[in-house]
Amino acid sequence: MNLLLSTCGTSILTNSADEGLRALLNRHANIKTGDDVPTAECKRIREHIENRKNAFVAHALEAAKCDSAELNGILSFYDNQLTPENRRDIHYLLATDTWFGEETAGIVKAWLVNHGFTDIRVERCPDLQTADWQLFSSALSDLVKWCAETIAPQRTSHCRVIFNLSGGFKSETGFLQVLGMFYADETVYMFERSNELMRIPRLPVVMVDEEAVRDDLRDFRRAAQGLEVRTEKSGIYWFALEGKHALTPWGELVFGQHKDEIYQREIHPSPSEKIIFAPGFPASCENETPRHKQEINQKIDLLARFLEDANHPNPNSLHYHPVTHPRDGEVTYEIYAWSDHGAKRIYGRSLDDGKVELRFLGEHL
Image 1 (tube, helix red, strand yellow):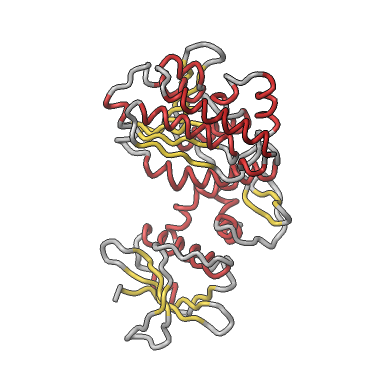
Image 2 (cartoon, rainbow, N blue to C red):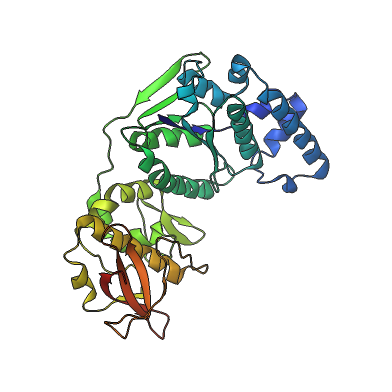
C-alpha cells in the first residue's frame, strides 16, 4: 500500500480561464473565502469553479493529466494504470489556506472518487499562503508537526509514503522536498514540461543537534505546544511572530527528531510555572520503562497547554478530571499517563493560585 501526499495548486482553475478571468483569479489568489470578494466578481468565480468541477469530474485519464498538475503526478506514479490495488491507496491532498486552494483540492478529490478511489482526505493547512511571509513560515512549522503526528505513524513496512510535488507553488514544494527526506520513502514530480516522472528516493538524513534542544528544552516544549516563550531567541530554530517567539520549521524538525529520545531518559523539569512537582513525584516514575517516561513527559506538556491556553484543551489522551484517592487525601485530580497494559495515572491536586501539584504516578483505580 502507498500513502500519497500531493501538494495542490490552482492549475485546474487557471488552465481553462480566459485572460480576464485569469487576472481575476490571480488578483484574489490569497483570499480565504468567497465572502471576501466583491459580489459581481465572486459570482463570476463561483460559476467558473462549478463549471470546472462538473466538466473535470467526467475527464478521461489523459485529459485529467493535461488539466491537473496534481493528477498528472498521481497518475504517472501509477503508470496510468488504475488497478484495484492502486485504488486502495491513501491520498492526502494538501491545500493552501485559500478559497481557490481548497476548491482545487476538492475537484481533484471528486475526480479520484469518481474513478474508484475511496480513502482521500483534503487537508487545508492554516496560514499556508503567499501574502505574508511570517504567516507562511508559521504554516511550515505547523506542517512539520502535522507530518510528524499524522504521516510518520502511517509509514510502516506495509505502507510507503510518497510525496507528490507536481502541483502547488514553488515556496511550498521546495520546502516539502526537504521535508520528504525525513518523512517520505520517495518524492516525485513531473520533470519540466515532459511526461517523465522524476523520482527522488529517501536518503539517510537526520537533523542532528540534540545539544541545542536539550540545553533549551523548556522553551522548545513550550513553543511546540503554542505557549508563550518569554526569553529572547535567535538562530535558525526561532523566529518572532506578532511579538512572540515561535519555532521555525527547522526548529520543529530538530525538536521532532530528538524529542522522543530525550523524553525517554528521565522525567524532565516542568515546562510551566503552573505545574509543580511534589517531592515524591519524580521518584514514583523512576522505575518506568523509557517509553512510559516519554508518555509522562508528553502528558505534562499537554497539561501545561490545558492550564495556560485560554481554551483549556483537554483531549481524551490527557483527560484531566477530578477524583478522590484512597491512599492520598490531598489528591483532587488525575490525568492519564497511559491506558494500555498496566495502565497508570498521574495524581495531583489543584492549588489556590491556579497551579497544579503532581503528587505521584500510580495504578489506575
